[in-house]
Image (tube, rainbow, N blue to C red; front, side):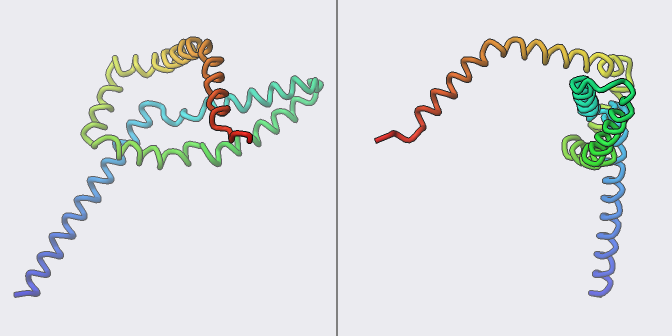
Length: 166
């Protein structure tokens, strides 16, 4: 009788763990689908652009002749390969999937997928980068006048915390 109970307990555990694995797999599929829908693979694009622009600027600063443009392009390709190793989508995607799995239930991910497939969701995807960029510019402009005050406060704190001279 004990062996039969052990058998059924093992069977139940196997069935439950199989269901849990299936649920985890479908949760990951939903996370990947959402990430694809919101073009998350482009998350590092600004860094690639900034690095390329930095090489362009350095090339211009060196006043290299146009015939040396191939050197610039070679170094830009090397820089891209370096970035690919650390922030390429194949490196980021597994971690992003984990973030979304931990942050949203599978049902919530499916709701988000449905939203982003809707006309309003598509509009959000198109408008959000520009809105985010403009809001960052606006915030930065409002913060600029406070920078000297913040620096002054930092300087005051540094003086206050400095060891007193005997």
